[in-house]
Image 1 (cartoon, rainbow, N blue to C red):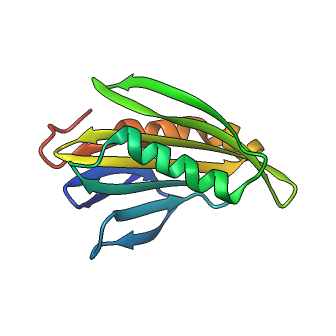
Image 2: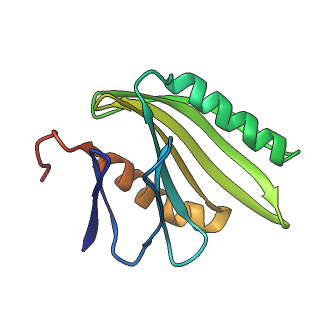
Amino acid sequence: MPTEYHNFGIQFRYPDNWSLIDEEASGWPRRVSVQSPNTAYWELQIYPSDYSPVSLTQKALDVFREEYDDLDAQPVSETVDHHQIVGYDLDFLCLDFVVMCQVRSLSLGGQTLLLICQAESREYREEREVFDAITRSLKTAEDPPSD
């Protein structure tokens, strides 16, 4: 049974065995993340609407490049529920583990959202559908309920 998150005019569902681990409510960006029992996490950063999805994903990519010398990045553009999403698929080495990461951004409900999904490569492959389900469940408070 999924757990529902409601705050900042945003709502989403996540597995009940994942933990809500972070919430920044006072400054920008607003931030919330959920973490699996292992290494996987899904993070949402909420910005005002004047932030560009393209520039946010580029800034995120720049931060990853500063941190990881061996970073491989593939640009991604997709449409989910009539929303244009831009970003990158990343992989890099961290402590002798291959880490896989999705960086995505879109405009939704008068806000610009940045999504980061990350896990060690084996867990990432196992949790990819969970990441996608959380992202697909993302709605604004004004959206009609989904079945």
